[in-house]
Image (cartoon, one colour):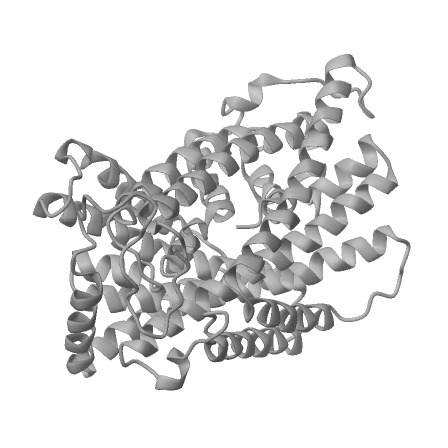
Length: 471
């Protein structure tokens, strides 16, 4: 997910839309993502698979829905890989500028180096990737919390640079309309997009029916609390008057700007470096999730069988990793060749990824409702309104992403739609593929739904001979 990345770059668009009501937007965004995440939380208590939604939708709705969800999710992760590689270039340039380096070179060089780095690192044991992500984001979160303490202290004592003060009215719409506030939650939604990626590690995780749901819930709730806090800090840090709101909306890296104003250049360098590392970590996660989706699809007959092979020592899908890395690298080169800035590349591909993931999240919501009504699991029917509310929120977000946009954002729904419709075309033109997927998913997931009485601490049996399960 990249919390430091999200907090450094996603607040500006919200401030430009709703003024000082940025914290309110992120609070509402947290509620929306929580009801959407419910579907994943419930389903991963019953199923685990490298294909994430590919298997969750396939086991609950049907194999065709599973393939469609998996194909859409693959598009999401590939788009997120491109946008996070571009974001690494954005923050690397900010870091070099903070160091006083005037000639930083093309951003594509940083993006390509990062692309090779994440592919190589992901080719090793999954635990190394997980520890790297935790260390990188841990440093970034500590730096953010230190900045928050300083900003809150100085605004509370009247010693802020422009005499800004703590203003709790930021949790009200203020001059913004409720419609504008709800529209802005689309920007906030981007900060959580990717929370479901850990579900793709279901075959490599100890006791996945316990630990994957915990990871999903933690990724939404803990980062949600951090996001609301940091957006409150950034809003009052810049100031809630017109000048402060304008400065926030125009900041390319808000955390770096505030660090320089409230603490000093040395701390802004620390934050800038952690932002680079956070963007790299987000690319690392996107690459890992995309490669496992390719593995799952290839293993069930879609694509060359070679892409389903894993390293016997680490269990990593190395060939799928290098394929995804190549796609990400070529895409960034194309954007650079077209004269697109790293900042625009980030937002453009992030938007495409979000449009694809909205479809995926909707499938998960429908899947958990179907599974609940089927009675195959132990989900109480009184919880059905939760995924239904989540579906309503997803439809609203999708509507706001499609209607009323200006170029080039008017093009992105067509790009995402073309990718998803390609998945539909494959299903219609290759019905035998859906049958193979159905047989495979049934054999892989049989007995995992509603399984009870298993010894605590042990997950289900491995679902593929070539997959490493560390239990």
